[in-house]
Amino acid sequence: MFLCLNTNPLKSVLYYFFLYFSENKLFIIKKKMEKLKMLWSWSFLFSLILRTSTSLDNITVFQSLSDGETLISHEGIFELGFFSPGNSKGRYVGIWYHNMSPLTVVWVANRETALNDTSGVLKVTHQGLVLLVNGTSSSTVWSSTMSSKAENPVAQLLVSGNLVVKDGHSGEHFLWQSFDFLGDTLLPGSKIGWDPVTGRERTLTSSKSADDPGHGDFKFRIDPRGYPQAVLTNGTVIMVRVGPWNGLMFSGATIYLRYSKLLPTDYDFIDKELICKLQPLHAYSVIRSVVTPWGGVQLLHWSRQTSSWETLLSLPEGECDKYAHCGANSVCRVTPAPICTCLEGFVPKYSRKWKDMYWSDGCVRITPLSCSKDGFKKHSGVVLPDTSTSWHNMTMNLQECEDLCRKNCSCTAYSNLDVRGGGSGCILWFHDLIDMRQGGQDLYIRLPMSELGTPLRIFFIFIFSFSSFCRLKFLLIYDLLHYIFAIHQCNERINEQCS
Image (cartoon, rainbow, N blue to C red; front, side, top):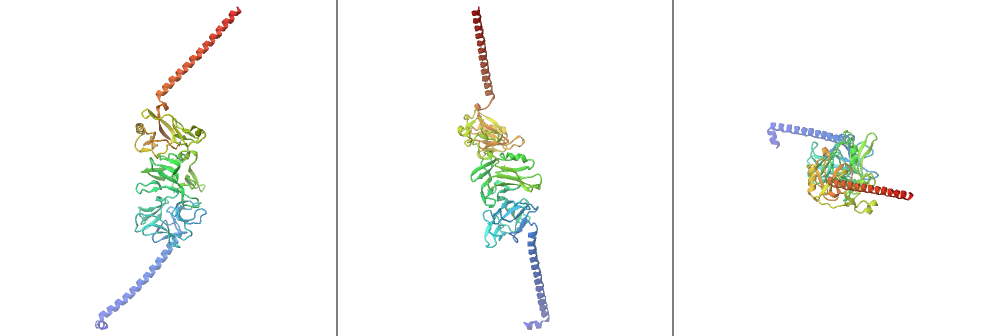
């Protein structure tokens, strides 16, 4: 080898030049790599400092969120991090209002499984799953569920308070979102009801207590049977029926009318899906709906003047808000007493119980229906009855609705669906009318002609009354004349005796 190099001086020179250049190049590359490594280390350290000192709203697969660190939404309304509710020492991952006291949590990830210490870490994997990992034992405590994977997953806390996982920073398609897995709070933009695409039901579920965010006994949901209506349930038992959406509000939430100008509301009802769009007049207003651990539904508004939550709507508010408090075919009214009264054409099923104010058995018809000889009685200012066994059509008018009900002998009542613009749509009932109370809608109830004030019936009543009056008047005149005649005869006898 050396003989070959010595025999060709040019090759020897090129060889040593190449060797020198290569060693220096490797040295330069090594120096640059060390500088890049140091720069990356400082960048990573700076990003950690930045996370705890600024309002970042997202994490990627290269980052994580430890206990004590938080994400803050873009406009600074919501915050995501670890917290302990009430007097509990357990640690949970949740979302709450930023810079608002007391702490108001609107969503909790690990509702059923609390962390025992502060070693929790929130991560995003390449599969796009948000994981809550116990840093001590490296066990998964909670994870999100996704139907597809992401190449570049990003978890972001949106301005709306919705925690989402998407593919890339600019992705608009959400692979997972917390709004699909609601807790006890409904925020503007979130939805309750059945999703016709995924078949998923979104419900609000109460917490067990102020110290335990686990699933409680009460649910606020959309009952999809018949014409969908909002109900508060305890297990399978309906506690409060807020009623169907009538274009302006839930039919049973009449107290909301007090605030309709302050808090205009828009609900879109599409295929059994109810989209909540609470839209305050001012963008800085903060409102939320919540299901309480003791079995109530509240609509709350944050007052900047008092720095506290003000209750705009709270159900149940009274006896009439309790489901079917007066039984079937009756109306519950706050005033006058008694609060339960039978509908016209109905009487208490058990009169003795009714007098003792046990109203749950309701009322029954005085006269059975006869189909072709029936009519309809208009009842104004009521909350529509339970719609779980009803039939509806969104395009029919009120006259078409009446005609359809009249032709069906099983139809017991009808009404408009939407009260806006003079009314539209049609809803029919076929059984007893349950859970009616004082409200703001018109309901047309089927009754036999004998129970209706029809013109012919009124005419006969008038003739009978007039004839009775005339007969009474005749008898009175007859008696008066008979009395006068008797006195006259008595006077004549007295005069004869005197003469």
